[in-house]
Length: 279
Length: 279
Image 1 (cartoon, rainbow over the protein chains, first blue to last red):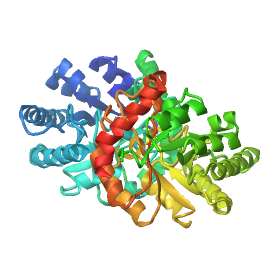
Image 2: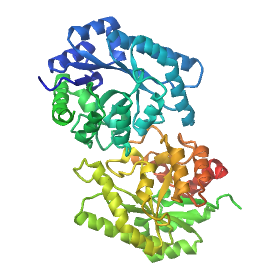
Image 3: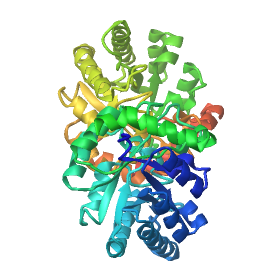
Image 4: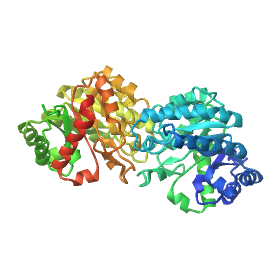
């Protein structure tokens, strides 16, 4: 009993470690699960990656990421959807229960936010049967509204749940990510709704650090380094019935520049102190 | 008939111009109204400022800004509320129909977002009678969620409307600002709700420009320079019944560095092309 039974380190938190190193430091920190990214997995080779993780005794909590399917009908959209099918295949091979989907921003030159959002709904309808056959849950991640135009037109948990609603919860769920959602005045109601509908497919923790980094993608912190009340947020997720892994996913230059074993230990300690007691 | 009858230039758009210059370039551009800020007004002298604007034949569309009242009870909170009473006095003297309120972020060292939001509701209740006596509408401005921790714990139009709900609409309304709200999947419903309740006290236009500026406060653009569909957004505000001024308020270094008369002309041209046809 280490207290880390439900903790997972997302490998983006130690981005500069190659896959064998990421797997090793995760296991050596006593962390039983890892969140994988497609690029390092592909770099290592898919089957070899699956074996590496399995041999280390780690669970895969999620695969990041599919999505980026807001383009209008045409070759780009077809290529994006085909790439999502490959991502579903990879999740299946890796034993990842869920593939995280980041919707994508406005298509180049477009200001049609409503249209881009419809394109997301259409993509889900097209991919859902394929994911069902693979036994992989698609999880829609609402990103912070500051990324709406260039990264994800899905901006709130309510919106993600609306997008998931037409599908079986085992097929399409949502990511609940503290960094992206903590500001939402409607958070408590929407987390409860997600739980009641069986829609929570992933719970990710990382902190909101101000001032926002010059590259806003890198403005995240390890829990405790920023403004988020993890006790309150985690309590909502617990009360919503989430019994799965809790992933720590941090994009931050200082974290990436640090020794990965040290980062894994810091993330685990932060989890034990700020998250685990409220699960 | 210039087409600019409902246009107002917020003086923050030409921040480096002193008040007499701001008033002169606004009037010379054929713009009939100006949005004022407290600091330049105080720098010029309140009564002199009121006279200056009146003598130039300009309407005052709003005064920016009050608020910043999330501190817990104590001397800081008392000082903030007293400062808001002075801001209400100034709005009355200037003939500004509304005082824009920016809520303020988390108190120093606090992670209690819910508590800070309650402090905003309490502040409104305390200030409302004073504003009523002055004939000034308090208008709550929801700021983009990226400012939630350091600037405004009011992040959505729905939340602003919930805060306004206990009060007479003539007393407490909301600002509808394109930059802060355009990402909201619930925008159409909330703008309609704001209109139905008579809560729209100000409509402000500026664009969302990516990449987000290194200082995220300065990431705004003149309409047309970014990602926002002003036809669609303005149509919502029109359909909600808004018949008042449309203020252009841009914080952007290149805009501030340009000649203020040129900026006033650019803003007016953008309004005529992208906003006025949809009012």
